[in-house]
Picture (cartoon, rainbow, N blue to C red):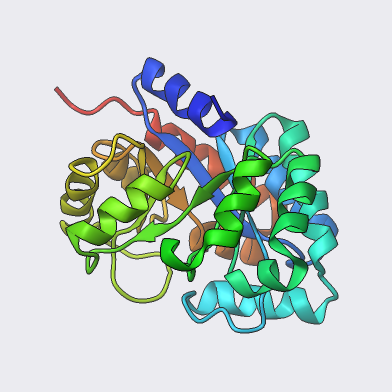
Length: 263
């Protein structure tokens, strides 16, 4: 079993969803981004998506775009990604990288996989890469016993979902709203519908990235998904209140995913 497999097995045994948090490396500085990731783990976040800064984050909303741009202008580099992965893993959480395919391809898939494994990482989420074009990465991940994670969306056909379900390891990332990332005021009905469609095609856990911004929304998603993914809200917390704001929001989100649904 991979670290992600063990995480979801433990969460199932505890009768709850997993909480996965995202922050980009280098925002507002490399040191503070790593400190914030560790604070998330200390607050109870189960896994951390270590964000890889990229010059054209077209799938991300304005909060993350501004943060990633600032990280790059501040000098964040790929080596800092692996430093952050090591810090998260040493803190006791599962660490996966989250980023666009171009930096991985430029670095070299085999080299990326080897360095990610050496840093204690467990997998890599590549939101703009599809399984049919991911042969080099899937092979490199397999050689290092890492989990490749691809995305599905409400627009995905059942055939597409089946392909992702066969290719992924660890979990399926369900981005349950159309458009760019970002916190939202309400949880849409399409999220639950998409989770059901994915479960009809694969036995892998399904984690939902939806724009969750607080513990109440986390509890709502946790009632039907195996994992809740939070990104923009944590980045905004770091922007507005520093590491301690990230810690406080993480604790609220942790309480949400651990909340028992009303009978």
